[in-house]
Image (cartoon, rainbow, N blue to C red; front, side, top):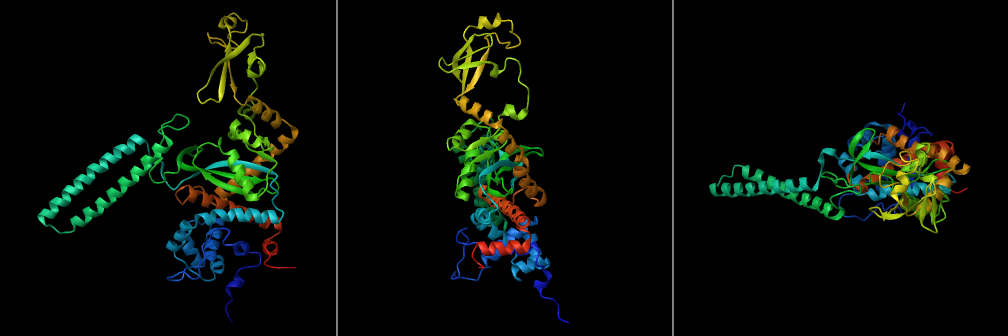
Length: 478
C-alpha cells in the first residue's frame, strides 16, 4: 500500500551507482576540492554531491546548468544521486566555474585507479588531437589594427558621454537619462580596459603567427584560436588525449591554443607519465606530430617513437631523382647526385632548421642528360637537409619495422575511438567554460566519463565495478 522508496527505482545495475561510487572513493584533497565544514555563512551544498551531479550529467551529454537543474527535479537517477538535494542553475554554474582544477584532476585520479585495477599498463601510448569549438564566435576575432581602431572609437564615445553628463548637470535635468549615461560610461570604460588587455596579448605574442599570418585575438575568449576543420573555420581549442594501448583508456587529456599538433608530442607524453608515475616504452601518433625537435626529446629518453613522416603517411611513390637518390657524404658534408656530381653547402634556411645544398657548378646540371627531369632551375639542383636528418631517417626506418606497423595499425581504434564517443555520444562539440583552464576541465570531464563507461564494461557490470573500486581503495575489506 505504501509507495516505493526512491532507491527501489534505481536497479542494482543502473550506471548511476557506478558514478556515485567513483566520486565517493575520491580523496577531495587530492583533487583540490574545497571542503570547509566551519565556513561562515549559509551552508553550501556538499562539494562531492555537486561533483557527482556534474560528472554524471556530462556522461549523458547534459552540460547546461539549467538542464542539470531540471534533471534534479524530474529525473529519478539524478534525484537518487543527489539524495533529494536540488541546487539551482546558478549554483551549478558557479560550482563548475570555481572548481576547474578539481574537474581536471578527477581524470588523473581515474587513471591511477585504472592502474590499481590492472586495466591500464602505460607501456604503449597513443596521442591524438581534435578541434572542439570554444564558447566564442569567430566574428569576434580581430587583428591588432582593428583593436586599435576600436580603442579610438571608445575614447571618442567616452568624451561625448562626459560632455553630455556635464551639460545635463548644468541644466539640472535629473530625469533618469543621466543615470543611463553613467551606466554606459562605466561599460565603455570597462570595455576600454578589456581591449587594452587584449592589445597586450599582441605585445607578448607578436603581430604574426609562426606561419607568418597576421595574428588575431578573440574578444570573448582571448585564449582560443581560429582553427580549421571539416566543419569550417571556428574559434576553437585543440583537444589532446593520451590513450593507453591495453584497454584504450585515457591517461591524460588537455586543451591547447595551438592550431597544429606538431609541437605537442613530448609535452603530452610527459604529462601522461606524470599521471602514471612511470615512463612509457612506446609512443605512437600520426604524421601531424612528426617534428624532429619533438621526436628528439623522446628518442633521447630511450622511448621508441612510432610516428610516420609526411612522405610515409601519404604513401606516394618516390619521384625520379628524389632526395633519397642522392648520397650524403658526412665526412665531406656534401651530397652526390646519381651522376656523381657534388652538391655543397650553400646556406641555412630561415628558422635555422634546414640546410641548403646546391650543385657546385650550375653548368653541370644544364649540360646533364637528366636536366628537365631532375631539375629545371638554371642555378642547378638543390637539396634541403634537416639539422636532425639522421634522427628523421632513424624514425622512418623504425616506423617501417613489422612491430611498429602492428602498433600503428591499432592507432585508430585506440586514439580516435575516445574522441568519437566524447563528441558524438556525449555531445561535446563545443565547450561551455571560457579560457584554456575551462576547456581543460571540460575535456577532462569528457575523458573521465569515457573511462568510467569503459571500466564498467571491462569489470563486468556496475556491481562488479562498485565492488572492485571500493576494495582497491580500501573502503571494503575481504
